Image (cartoon, rainbow, N blue to C red):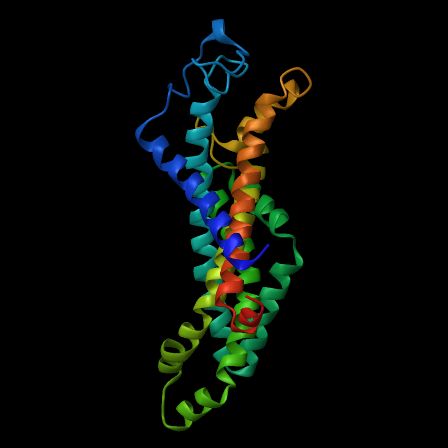
Amino acid sequence: MNRSTSLVVGGSLVALIATLAFLASVWTPYDPLVIDTTARFSSPSWQHWLGTDQLGRDVLSNLLVGSRTSLTAALAATMIAMTVGAALGIAAAVSPRWLDGLFSAIITVVIALPALLLALVIAAARGPSTSAAVAAIGIAAGASVAAVTRFDTDGIVRSPYVLASRYSGASTWLVIRRHVVRNLAPTLAVQASGAASIAIIAESTLSFLGLSTPPPTPSWGRMLANTQQYLLVHPLLILWPALFVCVTVLGFNLLGDGLRERLDPTLAQYG
């Protein structure tokens, strides 16, 4: 898949999910929390486009509100990951050797734990809540961002033009603002896309385990958890939220690939 296709397809999928999340803020076909026991397990129809669940709730309405819940939490976690990760990575690269070693050790310890496992530990310790899940996912994903950022920043500060700037009297803060941040921007954009896809999976997993947004607020992970027992008799109840998760993750991954190939000068020759 060439870079233009990856970028267009990935951007389109992300835009579609974002549009659905925005739509859920102003309109849904039905109230997603209203229970109608007379309409339990209804098949897709003109009245209920994607059918109803085991409590008679409209599946489409729950998916729309779930997209807002999951996407908002994942994007908040991504912002934390990028802010903390980028700041820690840059600080480690421009700090004295002993402080760089301390930062690098912290980053290595966090990376040694799988991101999802670390998020599970933090969320379990703080209890089920959206803020706990967002913080846990953000910290877990931020470690990888910090490692990549530190490596890239170290290469930038050792470049001839930065060394010349330092010899001319530029302060560390000026070097960071004028050279480091500007050169890191393409890499950070790609990392943000990857962190968002990880955050979507982690948020859905935490919701599935009951460690993210508490009920009754709909989320894709909780929809999977509540309908897993009906997999063999009503597989569509599992299919829809799983499909939304897969499409969103695929969209962010393709968007990241497209951005990397578009912004990375070493790949321009293959475009």
